Length: 160
Image 1 (cartoon, rainbow, N blue to C red):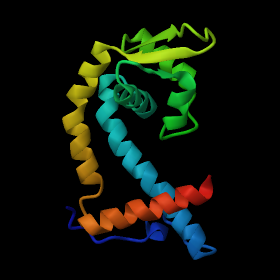
Image 2: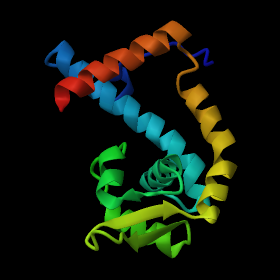
Image 3: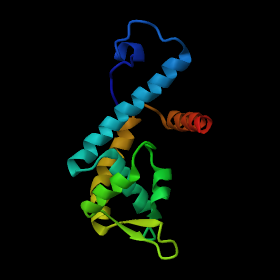
Image 4: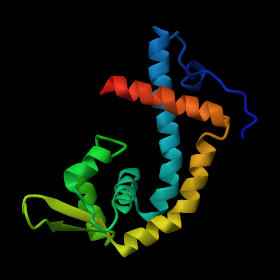
């Protein structure tokens, strides 16, 4: 836990004029917080040659198990919806972390699976990532974390 006193977003980004509304301040605070947390996680995965989006693909495929997932299903499960899944898969396949196969019934569908090397890499990263998960919200109590999770889920539900 940090002993630093929290400061406002306005101070943090050195904005001299007030926000136009609480809604603007809340939305920008959410974006800024996501950026700060993402940078922390990037510092964990980048030394392993992964971007956050590539790491996300590997986690999705690990969760899918040995049956794998079609490319479009991976895209639908991505944290950052702006990522180009095909390009991510190209890089992961070149690194030997995933495989892609055309499924038998529908040759247009590409089935993606994580390789044993990909599983080993995730297992090596898991303890550090778990520690980052804890650190990202260490200043919050359990109840505050649950409230945050619920509030963010409401925002996402209304944004879809």
